[in-house]
Length: 77
Image 1 (cartoon, rainbow, N blue to C red):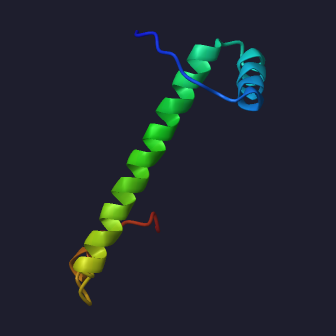
Image 2 (image 1 turned 180 degrees about the horizontal axis):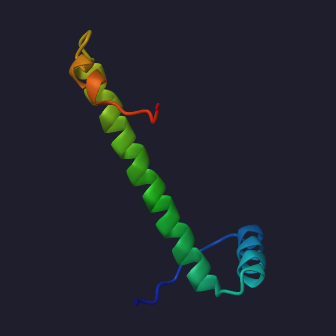
């Protein structure tokens, strides 16, 4: 681990401290978890944007997936 210094406003620091205490963790661990969660959300958002751009560039053709209809199993008896 590397120690860093950061600036944070008092209101946010109080919230972080309260939530850290409520979760029986340290301030540092709470902030690390929050940063990792934000990074995961950003990566998902970026992947979703690439996905949408791909379909915008090359839309699904009519009947493109019909070949798979007989392969589907919805659990019907």
